[in-house]
Image (tube, rainbow, N blue to C red; front, side, top):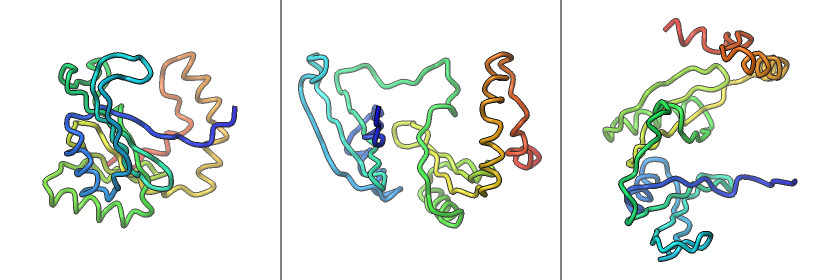
Length: 178
C-alpha cells in the first residue's frame, strides 16, 4: 500500500452555495470543483446531488454533498457534538487569535483559545452545524519525543481498562486549572 495523501474529506451540507461562500468568506478557501448528477455513480441510485470541492490548502480538499431528496441532515445522537470535527492547521497562534477576532466580529460563536500544549485551538460551527477547529502548532521536538515514547503503552492500557492513562496528562494540566 502506498497511500499518497487524503484526496478529499466529504461531509453533507444543507446548501452547497451557502457552504462554498461561507468557507471562502470566513476561512479564505477557494471553490475548485462542482460535480452534479441525477444518479449516484457508485451505487447507481436515483438520488440527485451537488458535490462541491473546496481548497483547504497544500493539496487538501474539503468536499460537501447537498442532497435535496434526502431527509433533513442530522448528526449521530449517540456521539457528543464535540467529537466529530475537521481541524485545519494555521501557521501561528497570532493567526489563530486574528481569525478568532474576525469570526466573532461576524457573529460566529467561537470556543477557545484552548491550550492543548502541542497546539492551541479554536472551535466553531459552519453553516451546516459541522464543528470546525483551527489549530496552531506549539509543540517542541522534546514534547513530541516524550509522547512518541508512551503511545503504545497508553493504547495498551486503554484497551484493557477503558480509563484514560496518565502518561500524557501534562498536556492539559494548565487548561484544566484555568
